Length: 491
RNA sequence: GCCGUUAUCGUCUAGUCUGGUCUAGGACGCCGCGUUCUCAGCGCGGAGACUCGGGUUCAAAUCCCGAUAACGGUACCA
Image (cartoon, rainbow, N blue to C red):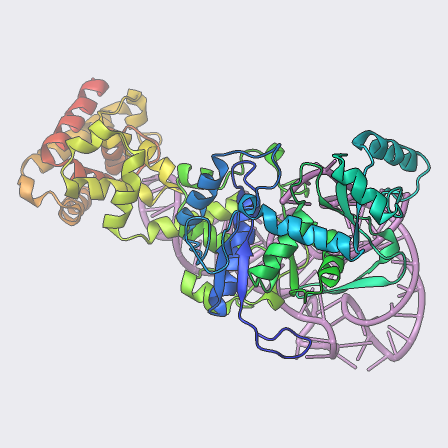
C-alpha cells in the first residue's frame, strides 16, 4: 500500500494488541479479524502484542485465553509472544526500558515534564472543573517547574509522573482511513501522562513506541481510540517519528446500542465454542458486521473474505450484535459440513456412553439427522435422545388429528405386519418409504393416519425427523419393538 | 459540561462521493401460502425504513444550513 502522503510503498503490518485483563470478548475478536483480514489481503504481517502495562487489572491467565481464542477462530499471527519475530519482545512488560528511555528523552528536550501532583489534588481539580462546567483537564500546575529543580526532586526520590507538553494553540488533524479528516483543537487536549509513578508506561506511550519500532501500519483499532489519537500524533511528533496511518473501526454494540460489555451477558469469545458455534460461521457473520462487499451474497469463505476485504468499505456507524443472524449462519454452516467432520465436531457434546453404543455408521446418520434441525452443535444431543432410549409419551399423542384410538391401533398393527415381512437388510429409508407408501395407497390407509402414529411410536415426539429416516436408523428389530409398545399403550 | 463520531425497515446493510433508473434493493427475524404425517429445509408472498426542520433544484435518501438523538472520550484503564 502507499502511505497516502508521498506514495512511498510501505509494507503492511497490522496488529492486535489486547490487554490481558480478562476473557477476550466478541468486540476484540472483531477488531482482530479486521486487522487480520487487512494484513492477509495485502500479503502483510499480522502481529499479536500483549499490552500488559496495567498492573492493577492484570490477569495472568488472560494471555493464554487470548492465544486460544485467536487459534480457535483461525486468526493466525506471524509474530507474537509465543512466535518470535524480528521486533520482539511482544509483551510490553518486557520492553519497559524502551519506554523509560524515550520518556527521559522527551524530558531532556523539553517535550515532556515531571508532574508531582498527587492523585488527590488531581481529583480535586476535576471536581471543581465539573462544578464550574469547564473542560475537565490537568491545570498545568507542574508544567512550568524549573527542569533542573524537578530533576533534583525526582532524584531525591520524590514520586512523579511524566506528562507530555501539549501545545496551547493550533490543531491536530487525524486523517483517518475510514472517517477522513478529523480535526482537534490542541487547546482541548490534555497533558497526557506518559509514565506512571510506578515507572510503567501508559497506553499512549507504550503503543506509540511499539507501533513505531514494530513498524505497524496502518493502526486499525476501535472508535473508542479516536479521541486519543491526536495526543498520540503529537507524541510521534515530539519523538521525531513519522506516524502510521490510522483506521478507526465502528463499535460493536449491545442491543441497547451501547458499547459491548459484561452487562450484555456473556460475550466471551470462547463461549462461542462452548455454545456449539463453528468458527467459520462466526467469522462470516462478524466480517459482515460493519463491512459489506457490495453484493447480495452473504456466505464467504475465509479466502473470499481476504480477497474482497478493504477498509474503504467499512461502515462508520456502530453495529448491533444480533444473535439470531449468527444462528442462521451457524445453521447453514452446520448443514454443509461433511458427515465425518460433523461427527467429529459433535462428539464432544454427546454423552460418551451413548456414543459408544452405536457403530460409527449409525452415529453418523444420527448426528446428520439431528444437525439438519440444529442451529448449534450444543443443540444436537437433545435432538438425538430418542435414538438412544425408548421414548415416553402420552398414548393420545399417537392419534393423528381427530383419528380415534381404535383406528390408530389398526394402522400400527398393519404397519407391524408389513414390516415384519421385510428382511432386516432391506430396512433402508428408500425401501421403507416405497413399501409403506404403496401399501397406504393400495389399501387406502390414509397417509396421516398411518405415518403420524408410526413416527410418534418411534420418536415419542410431536416434532421430529420423518418415520422412514428414523426406522432405517433404528433397524428392524428396534422399530418393531417400538411399534409393539405403541400397540400396548393403545389397548 | 466539554471534545469527537454517527444517523436508511426491529436488526445487519445496498443506494449518498458522480441528484432523476429509488412508488428505496437484499439478508436475518416476524407473518401467510405451497411442498409435507410433524418439525426442519426448500419455494413463493406480505408487513416493515430514508431522525426532524429549513433551503438549493424541474427533480433530493443523495447537495447546503440548522436542530435533535444515540454512542465514544474526557483515568497514574486500555
